Amino acid sequence: MAFGHVTSIGSRVLIIGVGNTAMDCCRSSRRLGGTDIKVMARRPREYFKASPWELEDAEEEGVEIIVNHAPKRFVIEDGKLVGMEFEVLEWDPGARQSTVLNSVIIPCDDVILASVRRTPSLDRARPRYGVR
Image (cartoon, rainbow, N blue to C red):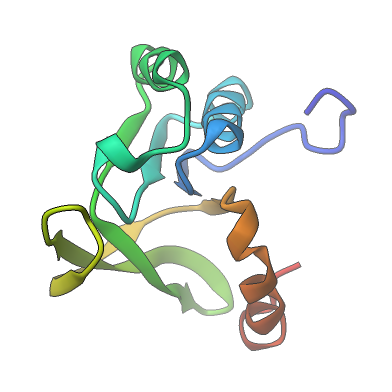
């Protein structure tokens, strides 16, 4: 954003990840024009990597933080991203083992992958979904 590479974003944005980078992404998405911004977390809030004040600031700016949702697939219609499917999880004490309760599709215009350690999986998405 600071370098001018991105000047706008869709109104419905999903951020995958819950570290400080994800908090920067969701707040930047708001400044670029996003109106419905959700941070998607696989685990309960007490396992987030983001600083507590980063989470509070994001929520004060209207960002919704959704817990226990694991990304499953992009939803593409007519070559356009329209949503993302998530598995809804229930965790054991200590959040080591999860059980899939069901799956949901959350509509979106853009997805930002802010989970740095999961970045290599993007390489598999590129050819299949046309991700750039």
